[in-house]
Length: 355
Ligand SMILES: Nc1ncnc2c1ncn2[C@@H]1O[C@H](COP(=O)(O)OP(=O)(O)OP(=O)(O)O)[C@@H](O)[C@H]1O
Ligand SMILES: [Mg+2]
Image (cartoon, rainbow, N blue to C red):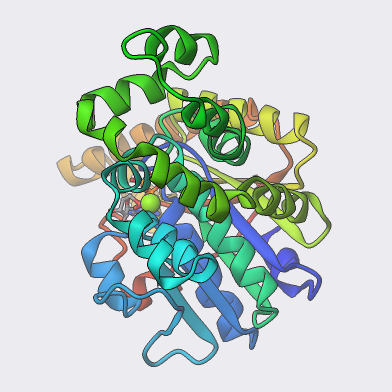
């Protein structure tokens, strides 16, 4: 249950993950708000919230640092911007001159803003920083919409080895014109990198690469180490992964995939939130059914049909929900309209029934 998780002072990090559009950002914000209202100093690290929700959380201006949410004590929010997080790391780890070389490098710019996995990686990096600051009773992390449910967990290893391993060696090895590029990159198994680089940067890239790589190496040498540390923290007691899904076949299938992956990595899976279940209609009143027994009015027939349809939809949802391979957590009803302010977040019943 979510409330147990929130009442446990040992819970330090909650991560909401799941496929695109299922309500990760909304649930992360609702959980953070509830924790804050219970008196825990909470920060929600969110990714690209819808504009009105961002405003409600005071995120209209982008900031590196968590900002207090207006009118809610103990609640802070920050929006992840992977390029700025990347820049921040460069600025903290390199002297001013070297930092400038890196920040202005076209390869760096393309890497920091478009390389697949960087956003997931940056979420990890920022989470590591927030944990290290020891300032927070609870950190709630909204994860990016992943094309593949695996991206989030793969990110540290992928980007880590990309940055501090073979790539650096490869790039610092003197180039023999024309010969080395494609085959060696392919052999190294990083085709994606090859196509990104050649597409975005072309020949220009090769001209200033060695100066850049030297600087990059000194700064990003510790990337993998930090990623590994954060990864370990995620496995430790005090972290809880919540998989968010909606009661439809494909999202539930993806949720299962995610669950299996988390379990196989030994990640602490708290359970699944099934968001946007159909609301239960108020039962037909006794008066209405008596009325009905006298003969059906068109209104009553319509109401009955609505109930029948609702029952049918709900039993389908139940059937799907029962197939989920995970500990039970919570169902959240569909609110009927977007949830875009604090009142909307508060109206989400987090102490509701488990699955
Ligand atoms: N229980 C709910 N009832 C009604 N609307 C909801 C509910 N949960 C989420 N929504 C709406 O669904 C939309 C998607 O939600 P949200 O942005 O939280 O999903 P997400 O998983 O973070 O999406 P993305 O993968 O794009 O980041 C939003 O407009 C949100 O207001
Ligand atoms: Mg989101």
